[in-house]
Every structure is written in structure tokens, then in C-alpha cells.
Image 1 (spheres, rainbow, N blue to C red):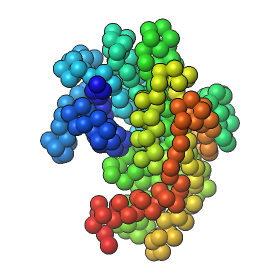
Image 2 (image 1 turned 60 degrees about the horizontal axis):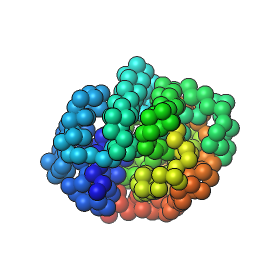
Image 3 (image 1 turned 180 degrees about the horizontal axis):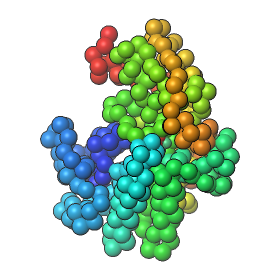
Length: 316
Ligand code: AKB
């Protein structure tokens, strides 16, 4: 019987993933955890306050709830990581090594750990970026994700740990706000346009980045974890792709539905991060090995977000 622990359950992906895992396996089969309780955590039971930097605390929660699957999502993302590189490196690496070491002690525990398109860098081929190519990340977040991928493969080969991973593109959802990423503009734009009719974008209008709607990201995460063990041929991390667009294309799609929408561009330090990442990703291996397919294109995603956010913000 699957019993999951989600570390970082109050974050953007964590909130959505926890909900879907509970719908699938049952509420009590999925323990949510985060560094501090949130307003909602009393309705989010089972919930544990858990510091991902504390090995003994993670071990205690795993033993208490007899966890056999850990989704370790806690991390500092690209933009925030550049403000405090040492803290980003420490959190991203130490917490990953804690869950890998736990699974090394008990190989019945399966691990999901997210990597990112941030593992790529300025010398990486920009278009249709292959699974294996030059990787020279120049953000601390990207460096930690690339190092993390090497650790995952190492723990699988040396210690038989069943760790699985995907390189997420920018994730776009409306239920929870992202925090500290470079692709966050693609979420912020919806809130600002619905509330204030205009948005000032921190990236250039023609800056293409790989992106994915949250429902697709959750589906990919559950699909890779449920795939038979011999289908998983890549133990570092799989390229994963859905859509690629620029701020201008996203804005045009939103304007089709909200004619008053306005945008201006004022690129900041995040532009250099975006410039170092691919425009689009080749995810043939994920499609071949475990049957990955995305469902949301740009227009379907925009419709879904505007509808959902209007209900959430009570705008008519
Ligand atoms: C970020 O922008 O830092 C993240 C990512 C692409 O991993 N959304």
C-alpha cells in the first residue's frame, strides 16, 4: 500500500501534488509536510511540521507514518537562489542527501526529486534541447540541480535507491503562487491583469522559455512514480516538455479573452538567467520510456487559468 510523504507540501507544486495524491490514494495515505504550518494546514491533515535540513526529523516522520514514497520538493529556486547562493546550495543539496541516505538505509522507500531546465546553461543547444548535451548552468540553483542529478544516479547505481526525477520547465498554475523563480512571470501576469488590468513583465517580450501547466506537471510526477521499475532507464533526470512561449505570446493569448489587458516590459536580473536556459526541450526519452504525454497547449491553459482565477478571486 502506497504511503507518501510530501516535503514542501505548501509550495506551488506541493499544494497541487498533495491534492492529487490524496484523491488517488486516500487522504490518510498522504502526509503533507513543510517547514512551518500554514493557515490551511489544520484542514490539511495529516500534516507534519518538518525541516528538510534535519535528517533525524525526516526519519522520525517516515517511521511514524510508515512512509514508502517520498516526494521531496523543498528547494530554493533560481531567482531567490542568486540573492543567497550559500543558503540555496545548502538547502538544495543537504536535504536531497538526507532523503537519499534514508532510502539507502531502507531501499523500500521510493524517492521523487525534481530537477529543472536550470541544469542547462549558455553553451547548451537552445532549441529542442536533447537529453544529453553540454550542461554548464550558471545559477546556483542550476548548479545544485545538476549536482543533485549526479547524486541521484550515484545512489541508484551504488546503493539501489529507486529515485526518479524529471527536469521541470516553468510550472504555471493559479491555485498557489510560485516563489523565487525566473518563470514566475507566467503566473504573476494572470493575477495582475485580472486585478489591475496591466502587468509589467521582468523578462523581454520575445524571451522563449519551456513551460507547463500544473495539471500536466502533476500527471508527469505521478506517472513516472507509478511506471514499472524496468521502464526507468534514466536515473539522473528526464527531460520533460509541453509548451514553449514568450511573454508577448502569452499576453496575446490573454488579451484574446480580456481585451482591456495591457503589458509593458522592464527586464531585470532575471533576464540573464532566462537567457542562459533553453527555448524548447526534446523529451523523447520520457515519452518512449514511461509514456509521457501532455494535454494542455497555450490556449487551453490560458482559458483554464482565467476561469479558475476569476472564481478564486471572485471576479465576474
Ligand atoms: C525557476 O524559474 O527557477 C523554476 C524552474 C524553471 O526550475 N521555475
